[in-house]
Image (tube, rainbow, N blue to C red; front, side, top):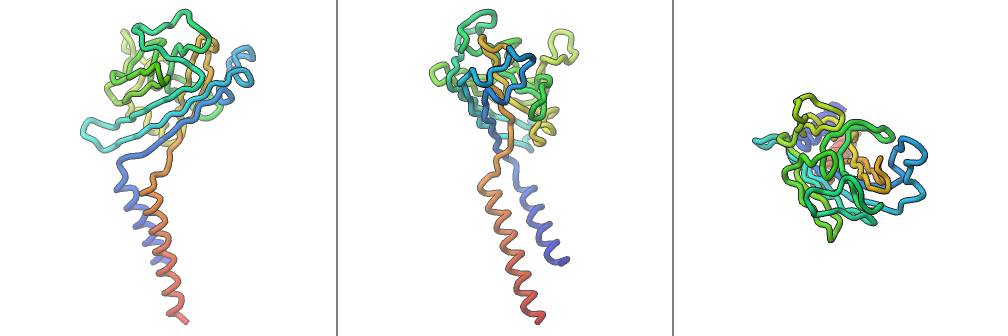
Length: 219
């Protein structure tokens, strides 16, 4: 049994030390939004959706980075600067944020991606033809405003959001002129890498084979 535990620990250690890139995704729906009041609830009304693909890279000299690409269906984004924030069609996006918070919980901003109140990602790219916003969140994107004191609507350094990201407690929220409190929302969750899965399966298979052979030789 000690032998098996050692092999399992070795496989887990190898997996953790070799992994520097992690994949995440978020599936955004109206049903995931936590409305402030019944009149703000898009569930059963909105048919919009979204899919975000994200890649976390750790161990770099400049600190961690999180690249993301969010593609929306049934909603429009604007390439015009400044973005429309006061009035617009119901299906026009007013803001995109990454928030802190577990499923079913509304919480403060982690990153102001697009639109209101500001865009803190210096790498933001907006493609109106595909309704896609993409960028790269890193530590340089922290912005506490002119007073330098963090507020609920401010962006933080990615390093300060890593624990929440790895715990599944960050989410995308898309605000439109039709649903200013949020039309679609999606929790950011990790996607196992094929190479990582193969390594885990290989380690488990090796442990099982060795254990079977050792057990056979005992009798």
